[in-house]
Amino acid sequence: MSENNKQPKASVPDYVVYAIYRLFECLLSLLPMKWVCWSGSALGYLSSLLLVERRATVTRNLRIAFGDSMSHDDIRRLTRKTFMQTGANLIASIRTATFSPEKILQSIEITGEEHLLKTRKSEKGTICLLSHMGNWEFLAQAHLALPELKPTGTLYRPINNPLIDALIRRRRGSQGTKVFSRRDGFFKPIAHIKEGGSLGVLADQQAGAHGLAVPLFGKLTSLTNLPAILHRRTGAPIVPIAVSTIAPGKWKFTVYPALDIPENKQSNTVYITALCAQAYERAMSAHPADVLWMHGYWKTGRKRPLKIDGLQKKRTGHQRSAATHPFRVLVYTGSLSPSDTEHLNQLNRLKNYRPDLHLTTVGEHGFDCADAHILARASDTSPKLAHQIEQYNLDQAAPADCALDFTANAEGATIFHKAKIKRIFALIGPFQSPFTAKAFNKGDAQGLAGFLDSLGINA
Image 1 (cartoon, rainbow, N blue to C red):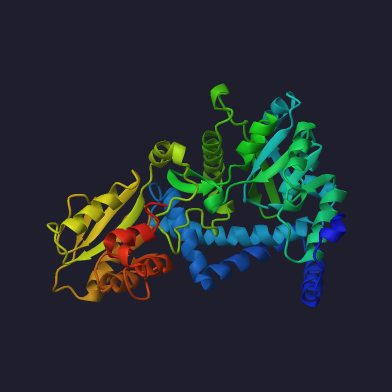
Image 2 (cartoon, rainbow, N blue to C red; image 1 turned 180 degrees about the horizontal axis):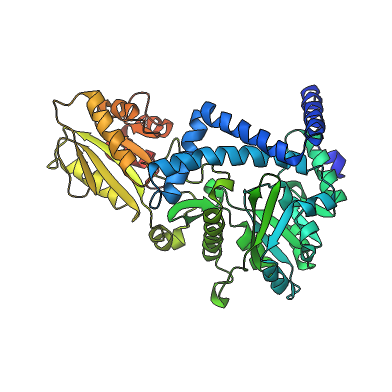
């Protein structure tokens, strides 16, 4: 089947969007690049004011990554700067797509090229570990500034609009870049590397159940194991490359040393994926405002918050213990007593589920298994307690990942909601997970044990 036959047919809305996109490109081409960046920065600033949920995601990510070293005021300033930088990079990427090779070379500086020269001597090809940073259009045209990358290939996620998708593929092809997508299968990019080519792989975003659980900035997340698999199949070195902003209209390529993978770890995908995470940490820490923090790097499941995505059962202990930053869980116990065996057993079960779990109870009584306790007297009003929880959450280096209500009337879920906790789960009511509802429909799966099961504690 030809590539044209594989492409979906364009609809009328696709043509409209394509026309608007091309018109926008033409308008941007009339402006100096500095003006393009300033316009994008202003758009980013406006977005930081309007996109409340997205701003909360950025702030949470930055607290997890830098909460130990930055104050809340620093985090707020970096959040705003991140929106502005992302806006500038986004609009500049559209403008960069129309650049000539000469114009591209005028817009970038290069550092660390010697690391690439060293790896290219092996003639095994190169796996370029790329990240969503800076003007990402330059990543697809890196070979223009780094001729050592030729022949160049990139893994590409097709755009839903087939007209824009075809335009991008044509442009990449005209610049000498081979574009590989899911439609091309897995063996074509491997063959490209084995023939001595370089392949760019974006692997810095959360991969869910399809990835591997590894620490990123000390906190467990799921990253794709694709770079590790490509390395296992080809033996090619993995070289991290990042793009960062120097000034409006000027960017820098930074080539880092190839990952140092010991001989006895060459086939260990978890180990190699963890090394990739460390490489991302290094680049993201050096230029944090250029990172696409709008993505949920440490997503907590909307239905099963306790499930650890990407956990390999054969390496369970190693993966769980590798994290240095805690998975924070708030549990509302209300008037429940530590002498109640069921509640005590389930809290212990929750606490012992993973070594990185930090347990904070909220109620009249404390529990020995908890790391912290927020006293909730019977006389405390709901707004007062909610404020107390919110302040406690703000005082931590990173926010709570989820909150569970162990009471039968879901009173704690309402308080957590007022405290602005993002992920809340209760046994009943509007904060009940669909998985909990499904489990509780089975007569033998009710109670706190079934509640924790439904939230992924045994998944």
